[in-house]
Image 1: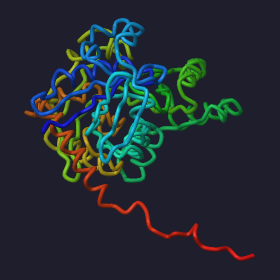
Image 2: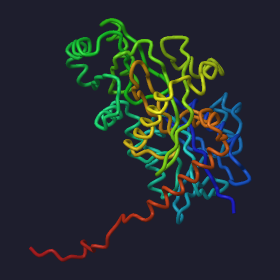
Image 3: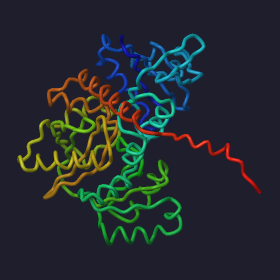
Image 4: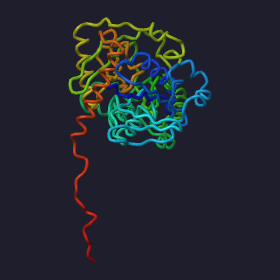
Length: 370
């Protein structure tokens, strides 16, 4: 019997449209001889929809129109190990969720928590791993604790910035030096990122970053470093994809270079990267160590910088397009990648079911004497 698989995408995130692209690629690649596929779209207000209209990406040119044509999900129920999604017209029984959301309310542990509460298997890392990897500051602190090299950094909350920004900038100037990168702590797709060369630019860019998050990360710039990335797939015995080198045409890729200049992102890369074998093996070693240090499973992409030494830069627990291009270069098709993600999700779920989550204490029946 074919499993009913929901592909969940969209959500309340500045990466909303990127999630739509990822989901569309999954919907086109998934093996429909193995799975009954139910697209589930979360709009920017957090409302859930389903329906065949969600299958075609061209329908998303008008988001208001898509909501009129799709069926709104108005009730969620748990039935054994199935998630029931109810509309006014039909009830969908879901066996497993493929999470194709990016950024807040999807990649940050929120949607993972939803699946855990409804006791449904889902692809990707768990609640805590997702939340940590979404936070660039927490990620770097944990990696550093595990002796994984990261670029020198500082961070500050909006509250502390408002009361002592001069002192913070002075510390960054002294310990990091210009140029520096300023980033919102919990965003992806290069949104809100700036490279700064002066105190004036620092202040302006920090305010931009704070418009997206209440915590910012400041990193020392490794000038003329190679930008590399790879994917890691698995659960207990992860494997590493081919390594990609980003061929830089600018200082860094912002949101426009990555996504709006249609297709050009994929012309700015080299797979496999031309690296000495010892460097390649070190990246593979660090990728697996990062995967395990953050307690990840499923499919993640790790971004590296390389100049004299290798630095782990960022971790994406739901990478754009599921990083399928890295796996294709490694001999794994997108369809096979999706099969792997589903198999891993089922193994993780099966292991969780073996754990004890409650004990019979009957403590409330104990009579209290005064």
